[in-house]
Length: 118
Image: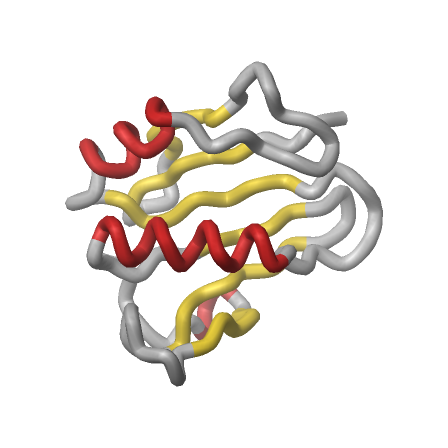
């Protein structure tokens, strides 16, 4: 199994499957194509989910958190960042303002996210 990402809209509908050729079990390559999808759909963009293809708790890596941050800064909006393993799902969202050094990434249940994604 290898990592895969799914870009979804504000209603949770699929916009794009991100499956670059250089992905592996531990890495999804960033591509200009992915950024173009995010940018072109920014008005309706809800978030990006990605897999960690193994059993265990779905916890974002430091690379994941850095990627979430730079994408939100570039887009100027908060997103939902689900991480999915074979037996767990974690919903990550920023608590605080984009660019605020005191903001943090927090795990939420889908119905308790403290902001509306838009």
